[in-house]
Image: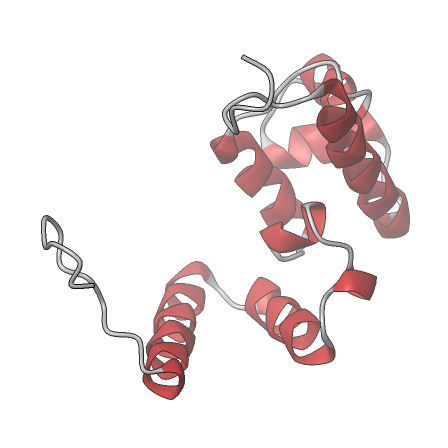
Length: 128
């Protein structure tokens, strides 16, 4: 069903592929080289760049780790992020996995504190 929020459009797939292509070229590697480093089939990666397949979350995470970029950069170019968000993404992408998770948890906790948002317990009802 079109417009239901669950379908990915061809335009969105092409945008994602274009973002990956630009990041790969910035890194100065070939499609085959990036795919091998990320542990995915080079032919499959080529189809992702051309916008022909809907890559899984796991595949996108492998690619962003290999490219050493924040996953958000695939969907929001740095020019559309404010400076602090772009800097945070750059910083988090350079950290090791355990440190990244810990740092991200601290950032989320701080943001909740500043915004006055309390974490919702699973199964809890919202109070209007």
